[in-house]
Structure formats: C-alpha cells, structure tokens
Length: 434
Ligand SMILES: *[C@@H]1O[C@H](CO)[C@@H](O)[C@H](O)[C@H]1NC(C)=O
Ligand SMILES: *[C@@H]1O[C@H](CO)[C@@H](O)[C@H](O)[C@H]1NC(C)=O
Image 1: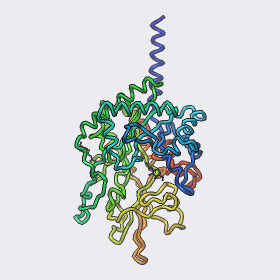
Image 2: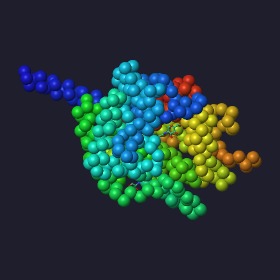
Image 3: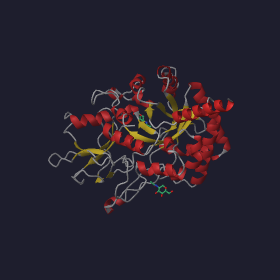
Image 4: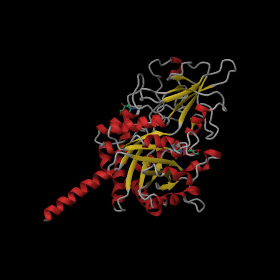
C-alpha cells in the first residue's frame, strides 16, 4: 500500500516537474524609465496590462549597484520606490489580476552607465562584497514581493572587430572607437569564478525565501565563453536569457551597417555573432534547452546612408553613423516598432522605405532609403524586427527545444496598436509560434 502511494507521489512529482520546465516562456522585459519619454512614446504602467495576458514573466528593468555599499539598489528611486509612483510595488501587485504571472527584478542591463562596469566586477571579487550584494537582493525581493531576481550583469564587452567582413575595405579598417570594448579585464578568470559563487550564494538565500527564482541575462557583446561558467551556473538558475542581438550597432559600428539580430551565421561574420552560435555555447556546456531563453528585440537599429554607401542596400554596408532619430523615441540610430511600421506604410515622413524581407528566415529583415543624389538628402538603413521575424525566432526556439523567448522590451513594441490595431504585435508574433 505504502509503495503504491509512493509510486503515485513520484508520478505526481514528475508531472509537476514537467510543468515547471515549459518550452513556451514569454519573458517580457520592461524598461520602467520609458515612463519618462514624452508624447506617444511615453509608456505608462497601465500600458503593461494588455501585455500581461501574453507574458509568462515580467522583468522590471533595471535596478543597479551602489558603488560604495556593493548593494543592489533602485537606479531611479523617484519612479521605483518613491511615494508618487512606487513602480516596484505597483508592478508586483499585477499578480493579483494575473495570478500565473511571475515578476522579476533585473539588475544591470546597461542601465548603470557603461563607465561603471567596474562595480559589477568588484562585487564578484571578495566574500564580503558578495555577501553585501546577496543580502541586499534578499531584502529587495522580500520588501517588494518580487518572485525572483535577474542578473543582467554588466561584464566588460568584447572589443569591436576592427576588420570588416569578407570585403573588409582598408579605408574602414581603422575606426575611431570610443569606449566600447576599450576596457581590458586583467582578471577575467577571477570574475568568472566570483560570479559563479555569487550566483550559488544568491540561490542558497532564495531557497530559504519561498524558493524565489534566479535567472541571468547575457547582455549583448558579453562573451559567454569568457564570463559564464555554464556548467557550474546551470543547477542554480531558472533560466539564462540570451540577448543575442545588437550584433552590430551604430554606436559600436558607426561605419558598418549589418543585420542586428541574425539567427544563423552568415558568410564573413563571426561564428558566435548570432543567436545559434550563442545558444550552442550553453547547450554544449551542459545547460538543458528548457533553461535557455532567446532574446528578441522590439526595436530597430538604423544607420545613415551617404553618397558613398552601396546602392544595393545589401548588408554589410558602408554607412556614416546612426540614422536620423524617430519622431517618438527621439534617439539617433534607434526606432521603435511603431516608428518602423509607420515608415514602411506612410509617406508623411518622407518617402516610403524600400523593404527587403528574408525568405531564408535566417538573418532578418531590413528596409532602406538611399542617399538622394538630386537633393543631397541622407538615406537610412534600418535593420528591424517585425511579427514575422519574431515568429521565425520563436520557431527556432521551438525546433531546438529551448525554453522560450524574451521580449526586449515591451515599451518599444507597438504598445498602442498603431500598426495593425493589435497591441504588442511583436510579442504576439513570437508567442503564437511557440
Ligand atoms: C530606457 O528608456 C530610457 C528612456 O527612453 C532610455 O534613456 C534608457 O536608455 C532605456 N534603458 C535601457 C536599458 O534601454
Ligand atoms: C569569445 O571568446 C572565445 C574564446 O574564449 C572566442 O573564440 C570568440 O571569438 C569570442 N567571441 C567574440 C564575439 O569575441
């Protein structure tokens, strides 16, 4: 009799276990500071609501690190915890309406200034600094009722590759690069090991706190094989979010426009500057597919086309820095999906962009408008994500048996439903292919 009960219990446990490792996670990152944008790009906390029936997880972006105390700390106290908005608490209260939703607090995410990378290294270095950080995380999660913490650790970025792809022109091989990848970490191995211990210690603490979750996010240009000991980390994490996009950006690669978020390697590009290359690192180092989440950007990267740019539009292209800012996000080199879809269909902002889709489903879509010989007006090249390409990425996730997708981020998806009437079309495009 007892044996039978044990058998039944074991079966139940297996069933529960299977449920806890689904392959259709939709992890929605949300840049809370998008609240401070003006006009139609301003994202209010109530704008989250229609997304929350699509998302399995909501990740609050971002908290940071206090350089003096080594503690995790709100980066924008006025909106995070201040009396007026108190987004930390408001957001976790969404769980009353969406009982299956998990809400995580993410730390880092390049919301701490790039020059402050050292704070993230220092925390990993000693047992004292690690303990301070671990305890502060415990407090934040408990005080604000988060279901878990995400470490979007600001490790140093890899150097910008000086040489262009296969027809790397000499003229462009010497680039002025300010900041990015300039930092040389002399203690990579120590920081990698320290981070592994940090993750273990946080997990040990969280096991005593209702078994809250711990995830990590690999930011763009952070080389997993240098800083992430996948084999040692995996048992202690719920998931790893791979931000395998922004492979080329107008800041890092001002002279070189290319697909920002290809799924597969293409000729002349590095083997790991695409989703598949980064996923393979984790799979080959012992991480089960169900713990690997693939990031999908909602925004486009843009560059300026000049008289010297190839007129074919086919990347890689010679360009001259970031493309003109969009009317809502007002940020050179970046367009929200709302701004992209508007430029693909309306002529009010100049001529319609010529759009080139990707029947191979491997590299992504782009759209462009060439430099205008007659008027001397600059052109623009836009590497973008849309519901179809997001769906292609979700198909990849499904085919490889991975855990799901991470939407980065909700505030740059078409949250007002301007494009087709549906709100959050990129999030939807991905979710319904999982
Ligand atoms: C969040 O949005 C704000 C406002 O547009 C922007 O300044 C900031 O860079 C964004 N943060 C991240 C991490 O993307
Ligand atoms: C990441 O590091 C590995 C070796 O540790 C190297 O082979 C690879 O080229 C690096 N990737 C990038 C994008 O720098």
